[in-house]
Image (cartoon, rainbow over all chains, first blue to last red):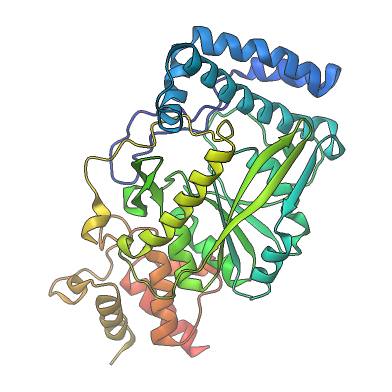
Length: 321
Length: 84
């Protein structure tokens, strides 16, 4: 089970993350589900998942706590049994996504369908020749949906950090499947900025999560989301300004028992040469936040940030830049 | 104007870093983190400033990693590229 659970706040300006991508489950628990998928298929794994999630939600207060940050904002008037049900539904959807991801890797790509709405829009943006930045969020199964970008006729690069010791596998790590995208580590040299710049200059596609800050506070700015301020990265908008690359906001969601859909929510154009100050990029990050609000209004149980996005850092280094 | 002076002036003007031209500034100090205090996002600005003032793109980012160590290494890298 992937959590996004609160991290201890590390010292220093470059490590203030409040989330982790590490799975809550042990390697053994993951192996149980992988075995279930091999023997019983997706439905058999789902059957066990219903009870597993119920156990987690009922007997692990930390799971309810972690889901409450988002649910309190999305459903502010709900309490008691209703809130418990919300926590169950949210965690169940996340569990299904993780099962589906393993299904794709273990049983093969024909077991799940991934559609892309807005392919023509993306192709026309790529044809501009300045690269394309896809900004998405921890919604639906972004990993599965990204596999549908394979037919864009342009290499796809993803900014992904993997926690040391995370036992949860990417779907292509289960078997012999080809990795559908190249991974850039945001904790690599200079936050991967040079690599990102390079792929955009090469006209390639770069995918960045717009809802979590992966560098330090100096790479974040504040926008409103679901009625409160959150910190989001502004590197996508800065890269767009530096390279002239257009931005497409895309969100994936589970559209059926065995299907996922990836949709283009909006296109953002960032003027060139906006400079160093974070404030210059606020309008564009705000556009992303508005798109994300529209997404969670339509798919409330498919947004998986299990940490308090609304906690503000004690100081705002960017404000002085 | 030699390359290093031109580079320092360009960075001071474009990135608002007047300390670059202050007496006693250590040209071997790291550009990122402790030293000049640039952060990862500033790497993008650095590439753009070099393109604008010296007329070439840093396409091989592996070379960039070495070049971005300090003012001295960046200046030497620019000289090398301009002489090619």
